[in-house]
Length: 341
Image (cartoon, rainbow, N blue to C red):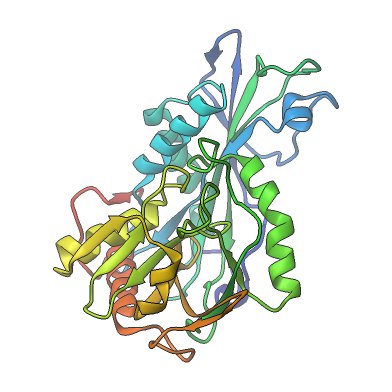
């Protein structure tokens, strides 16, 4: 079968209904076998737990066409593991990790014509998610759940090159100490909507959140981890119990150390030292790395030596290497690229 006739370079980053999605239901203490279905609509009670108490979580990963024509996903086992950890924290039943990966494979195979061709810059974005679906009026976990995966083709994140962005230090806290900042719960993203819209209204692309306890240490943005490069070429990423463990960030740190031979550090990063870094980037599934050129805060601004015109040299090398591994042009660690077909 032929690929869908889409303008792959200009489809944007949004939802497009594709042919099939996977659905599995948890009821009477067990998950059913699940199935691929055509219907993209969900029917539930007005009192469904997800609508009353936001008992929901999600993941995000992509399927690609590699240089040699294979359809692959990047490290889906880590998405399965992270969803397991999130479910446990939210008192939701764990969807088995092996079944998670099987479901990813089924969705990609069933929508193979929607996987963009190699070289287009586009990918097939997969959204696994789970939510409490039965009526719950007292504050407690649901008894019944749905686990679902849909997919949508998305265009290249950077159109015309990755231009550095300007961000601001937020007055809001992203997560509470010992809260849910380290899991991928929907409620975390709901709480970030007002701060990000405030940032946009003030002309900034993103927020930098500081640690909620002391507000002296860098944590992350609303949807991405930070990566810094020192002037001597060391790659540094913040360490905190309230940071979401980004699969992209963890992969980039391994690429830096094991593939490119760089020195790496995962440690507490104090905001006072950010001015001394040479490069800064935000890392996540969508863009891999978004370069940051400037950080604005109450008392002034930080302008990184890498500038506002293009990615800094170290971040560019990391970006090119990781995307090369994903697309099959660079050899990466064993098991990172899962061939679907």
